[in-house]
Structure formats: C-alpha cells, structure tokens
Image (cartoon, rainbow, N blue to C red; front, side, top):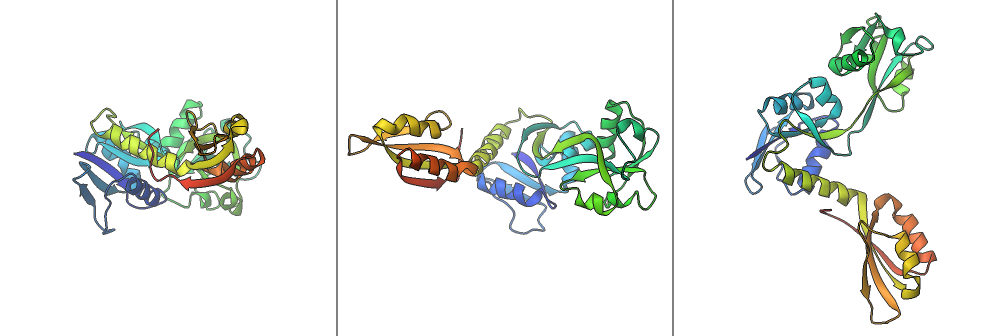
Length: 279
C-alpha cells in the first residue's frame, strides 16, 4: 500500500486535497483525522504539517508526499522533487532598508532573518556570502524594525507587506517555489499511477474541448487555430461540404479561439470542460 503525505493545513492543503479527490482518491471526512486508508486504490494518506512532509518522506517513513519546493530544500532531506504541481506559487527575495543594499556581497557579516534558514543559507553559501542567520517562525518583515536583523529573506508577492515595514527588495531571486510531489524512491510501485492521475487533473484544469462545424474549404484555416495536442479530430457531416472538428485548447485562450474560429467561418462552436485526462 502506497503511503502518501498530504498537507494538513496552510496554503497548500486545500488545493492538494482537491487535486487528489479529482484524481479519484478517497479523502478524509473528519478534518481531525490523521490518516485515511483508500483500499480501492491501495493507498493510505497521512495528514501532516507541510514543513514536516519532506522529512517523513526522505526518511522512508512515507513513500511520497505533496509539499512546497521551498520546504523540500529547507529540510535538506533525502527526498527529491518528482514533479511540479502548478499551485502554491511563491517567490523568495531579500529585502532591507531603502538604499541600504545594492547586492548580495553587502550582506557579508550581517544578520539575515528568515523562516527558511537552510534554504537561504545554502543560497548565500553558493554565492560566497557568509552571514549570521536569524531563524524566525513568522513576521520576518518586522525583524529589521525591531533590531533583530539587518535584512530579511522572505516570500514576496506584491511586496506591499515589506514596503509597509519600510523595506525594499534587492538582489537576485532566491527561489521560485510551488507545490511539488516528492519521494526518496520515485520508482516505488504506485507512484507512477499517482503521478499520471495528478497530471491528468492538471491537464483537465488547463484545457477545454472545443467542438465546431466548418466548411471543408475553410478547414485548414480553422485547424491552424485549433491544432490540438497531437492533431484535431475531424468527422464528416451529413452535408458533404462540411465537417465537425474537436480539439483541446488552453482554457485561458477559450474566448480568443472562439472569436478567431467564428471569423474564419466556423459555426456551432461549443466548449466543454474536461474532468479527467491522460495525455
């Protein structure tokens, strides 16, 4: 039975649980439950703190898990990234008082506060900069104002939280993070099935099916707009001069594609959501 670690709270938890449910796996009904066995799919889920998942998986106590790339690297565990899951995106940057730092080299010998001591320390070491790391569990952006640190390394979205504390971003991006599937042994039986299912969910979320009718004389122009994943499906209609076409298109492009199809003469244009896929 494959043992899978799932985030029990935080920004990764809800989407991870939704993906697993859409992939056909049973999930807990009681939010206090620590584990759930899914006999039909021969898996067991363990609900853990996101920061602990890489450690459990890396030790071999669990076979595979969903966590953040940032948490995986910060753990320094033996687990490795198997696949990116396209949610929970975050960017790590350095920040300090306005105009105080022009680059990483100016951090040498100073105090840098972060909740990701290993991740940030390893990044600085790779760049040949030695600092005094100040480990904090949260509210890192307040550390400079309170005199605990000279600069911070933290997750940045718009930068508004840092600016509110009188800080500005400097230096290179430390890490672009997102949710990832991790395992110390990706070849274990069952992991490939899990991975195919999760990728199927990603495809279903990113694409839709477009069906339309078009005259044969305009088919080439229409299929240039909807080339599909491999090739569009073209079927004859009762009218010998017309055909029916079906193709997958990126969900974000749906309305643009419909506009372009209509402009080249396609009619009866229909869009259908995809609930599951294998590509």
